[in-house]
Image (cartoon, rainbow over all chains, first blue to last red; front, side, top):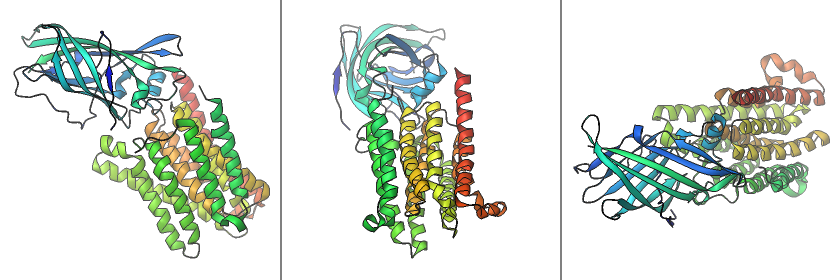
Length: 198
Length: 288
């Protein structure tokens, strides 16, 4: 599979990535680590926007997000989004997005990100994460800045950490090249992640 | 949203290619080759005009159909045509297509969505329905003295056209446009066949046109988020209904003049296909 590296701007880049439609076993980062976290889907959000006919941005989100990450000696991040969970607030448009004109969710149910290299940003600010982004059956290497937004104890005493990232990608790089005259190529993703330490 | 060039390369040209295939002089190209080449080239051109050159290796069902399925169907049609004196062998070839095509198009369902039992049931059912439709359609061509068989390409064209409409209304422009290309090619050849009362190569028209039409319905049903079993069932029922004159209660139709029987056959398919389109349209408007 071809790979291409995307370096995004300061705002960061990416992760969207995703997952498994039930059978994907993505490598859980060092399950034995004391710094292993599972994504809390209730407090994790994956939003995107894309231009409609070069007129105005349309916003949407994915409602089914999962994943895990490890902040130990060998940091690693794995996230999965179910393509069928796309939600732009319009059922007809969502069905079209699920079709083979766009995500082809029946054939490619999972959008996945799996880190391959992680470097710390400035002291305590987060991580520069290089990883493989799989979307629409195509895998590309991307680099994102995962900015740490906070950490602390939840209501049950469990330890939680949070991150945020914003990045862009071109959908045509992933073979989603239909209707480019109506729906923009560049997609901006805005992702907030909260994980619960295991 | 629709590229004007697609109207030329994806509709008009396939219509002409289908007509040329039906009119191809059999002394030069044989009985099968005109239809086989006409439909296959039309579908190839229509695919590239809509979706560009397919990814290699393919990783989507419509790419598999374009790269592997289409040439395989064409080859099988030529082989089956060369086995006219050994009909049993021709059916072995057709059975091969009916067995191989569904799993090739349904790889993602086999991988992600179905248990082993579901996969076995679906694949067996699809192959059986495909072969049944194939057998019934070819049988309807062969009754001696019945010129209503000349309606068969038009019957398949009407079904493919309805599949295009239903797929469009159920949110897949990619599938809709390729189905429209198939419909254009079949209707181009079908109108020529009806107008010139030309029976040459109709078996080949069915051997290529029927599996492609069923494949379009299958792709629309499984990869278009809105097409339901009801839509797909009505579409598949069209070609079967068009063989009504060969049903136990419909044999009186065989006494009709050829052109009237042809009209009955096209109308039977159009009723089922039209119903599928109307249901999809109502659902589309209701969702707005």
